[in-house]
Image (cartoon, rainbow, N blue to C red; front, side):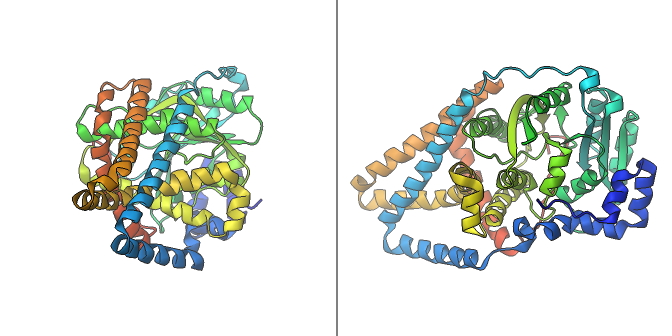
Length: 476
């Protein structure tokens, strides 16, 4: 199985102590920067976003676009029925997954490990322009319930970001926290940054935390126990991500509902049904050797997390979830929220492109359950959101011309809306959110998803690798 390109500089970094690693990063910065950005694409071009679209995918997109536009004009009612069927199927799939997730609560707790049994752990903290929030995370690292002599925290910083460095140092970091300056180079993305962290990591296990994260102190211990209870096929354990500022405004409240559904019901439900999961962007814990076998992160995929979750399935690795919680900060302003969701949707589409370039290989690698994840969840999220305004417009047109013909459509749409509201309300209660009743606004919130989806489609065509940075601090 191909993994990270094993050059002499990679081996030198892995075997060196911290001062020697810093020296190598200075003296061989161009070589390291090339590996950070393109090492995965060179080792596994078939699974790399940088390889672009297959010719058949471009033709299929053109035919689907022109065919869809023609269908709207020539046969609007039939088109509405097709769109409604697809949307209803997507909603019901999520309802089934959510119900499975509701029941994913009775597993036997993993046997706790004594200190001397705990493996070494590397924590990666990629941070760029995070001076407002990173100090608290550094203090959180000092409060982790994990033996300090088995813990290393690598704060990965851009060289032209002195403010974040000052904030880290001002937080009085414990001795196991180390700042690492990244060699300069494109693309300036999170996955490029953590690829360097993977080269430097000494831990048997490895996790990513974002600068605004607040993980529960026992999260590492609990995950270490989970890995110890499983065989080597388990490559990754995804912790729960929930928002700590849901009460700030309507947007943060809806984002909190969205996360509660995804991390308390949907991802655990997918695991229970044997489906690969699109990982969250943080608090995913790996066996370091398995992650290196997988090739690390794709620096050119703007949702490197979802891609890596699919790649785990494609290469025969398993992923599980755990109810250890990391609290994050929801975005409270529409502009940054829209840019973040656009990047997520674009990355989902790009991930689907990557893993369907060779359909026969895709079917062999993913089987039925994997295809349901890749196509029914990852690819369908942006596509159903993009098509929703089209379906709404066609519904209004049909109501104006022949109201009786759209009764089945309205019934299906009502079923879909009720399904989303119901599973969102239930997940909010499970997550302990203060206002689960706000799930009634999910249809309004979905309008924002539709705008983000169309922005994502446009960017996928003109700038597939552009990364819109998400601001943190003061509720973004």
